[in-house]
Image (cartoon, rainbow, N blue to C red; front, top):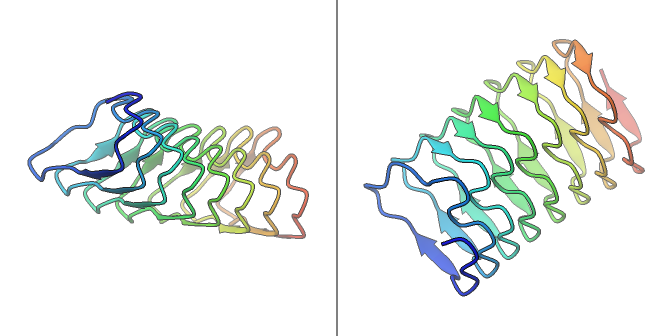
Length: 173
C-alpha cells in the first residue's frame, strides 16, 4: 500500500499477524488506525510519512516498535506506548511535529538515535528508570521541550541529544 494517498481509515483484521516494512508508508490521507491484538511488532517504516495520521491505538500485544515506524506522522498529537514494548527503534517518532505527549513504560532500556528528533511540540518527558542510555540526537530539535526527568539509571547521554531544545528550562537528574 506504499504511497496509496487516498486511504483515509484502515481497519486491519484480527487474523493478521504481520504488517511488513513500509506497508503503509506515505499513505498521506490515513487519519485513524487500530492495530489488532494479533500484531506483536510494528516493523521499520510501517507508517512513515502518514502525515494525516491523528490517532493510533497500539495494542498490548506489541513488544517492538521499529526504526522510523511513525516518522513524519506530522498530525499525530499523542501516543500511548503499551507497557509491553521493550524496544523503540531509531527515529521511531522523528518529525512528529504535533506530538505533545508520549508515555514510555519501564521495559524500554534505551532511547535510541533520533527517536524524538524534530518533535517540535513535545513539552515534557519523563524517562523511566529502566533506561540506561539516551543516544545521539534523541531529542534534537524538540524546541517546545521545557522539562525532562532523567533517572539515575541513565549512565550514558550521547552527543547532540538535547541540541536545539531552545525552551528547555528544567532538567531533573
